[in-house]
Amino acid sequence: MLIGQKMLIAQTNKDFTEMQLAEKQFQETQNSDYLRFIEARATQMLRDNKVLSEKKAKRVREITHCSKNTFKGIMPPNLYLENIL
Image (tube, rainbow, N blue to C red; front, side, top):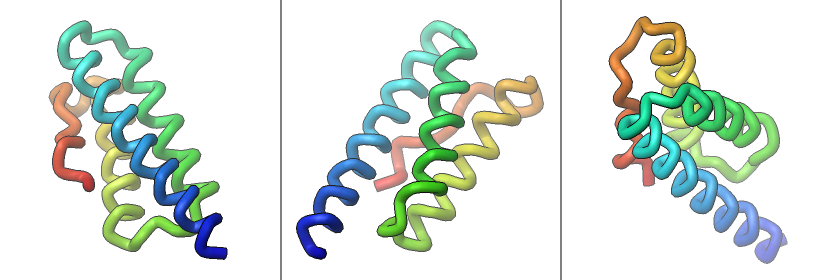
């Protein structure tokens, strides 16, 4: 059980890192594919990852909300992912 949890935590950290990189690329290029990636990854994390702490799960929901609203032009293109971990 602990090995499985460690693997899921490692995957979560990798996912957060990838979303941070996607945010940076979006800010540099304004390519909406990066927002789609962030939204898809965050949605997958909420659906599949059962070891997310409530704090991280809340942050993932916020990220999903921000990426959707940024994509729709409602929010400015800054998702503030750097303070997740």
